[in-house]
Length: 487
Ligand SMILES: *Cc1c(COP(=O)(O)O)cnc(C)c1O
Image 1 (cartoon, rainbow, N blue to C red):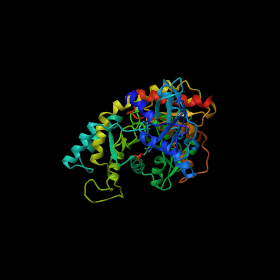
Image 2: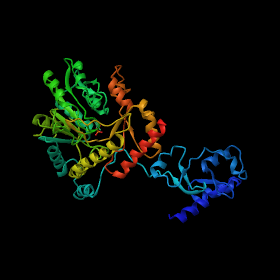
Image 3: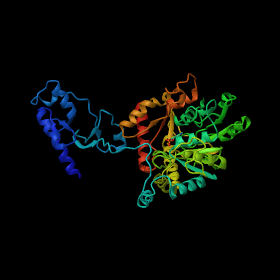
Image 4: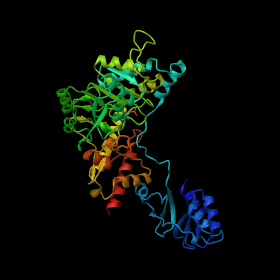
């Protein structure tokens, strides 16, 4: 719309104070924006804004169509002087304020900024393009849509190479990958497995599926990952394994964990579901412990829709996982099942997506680093915001760019910040509740660091589909929200 059209529209939806409700409804109808502007007769100074909802409530309250619009009760409207930046205006929106008239020096409306639901910054969206379409189409055109087919093998080979491991076994999702890794270790009823409490629940659930018990460790404040110093206290004669999680893309401190594991003869499964490509002392995660597990859910670093992978350098584990993934069927004899297995296979269709995604993973990793750099420089100076960990021995992949909020210093609570950002089209996500507090586990212990991080952490939009300007705008909105609060 050019500016003369804009002005005409503003004229169309303007009524004066003495207009009737009916005339106002006609103006609303004409504009198609669900609202009308009330202006002073003659001077056309802005006096207020009525929405069709305000009018509906007035009619329900007993007002008639011929009552003057001045009887309609309406929330005070916000305005901004013409020339105010878009970023500034965005921060003025809330669940009640969905339109901001821009006024000239004479207080006349010269523009109207309406909240656009389509302007929305999602937390994590996949990067899907022609390549994905071509490979998936190939499955359909050749009929290889189920779990046999060349893409499964290719995806496994590519992923093993990416992680620097000898073997990679694709599974139906990250949770089944964890389950198979535990089963390959022979873990079952009576055993205990140490997991961080601050993680997605699947880490603990996979242990529970085997009949073993997850034992919850506290986190370190600095990396948000399992505190190696909290592990030894949890070790008993039943302990069989430790599952460190590389939370939100930053590696756990593996050396002390491996040292404890060696001392007590425990196995280590890395839950790298959120950290494809992250490195610990130069090594890609997943290949550092006895086994590593990945997820390809839609919001992860790369996706197959649903999907998972176990990587390992141990041939025995790899073979056991392949058998368990396929109904426990003997490799030598078809339909002969020495053990009870599962159907945890990935389909060729999904693997086709996976191959296309692995061909672009370096680009995705770079995009995530670029996003993180912009956030770092924009948010780093704000007292009360702690940026994501960046240990010298690690490379964070910033699966979700996450921060910890000190509400005392910032003047706004984590949940309020989430709400304020949501009203401005910015989707965020609070940290996972610690698993020991989940109703399905409900264990009466206190893990203060995990609980603190969980209560004060939030993830910001991290989709590689967001461009640099989008991230800069998000930074600006966060800064404005925080500044408005602390004033
Ligand atoms: C996503 C995730 C999983 C589970 O993966 P799914 O593919 O969703 O089953 C496991 N652990 C962590 C830490 C995750 O983030």
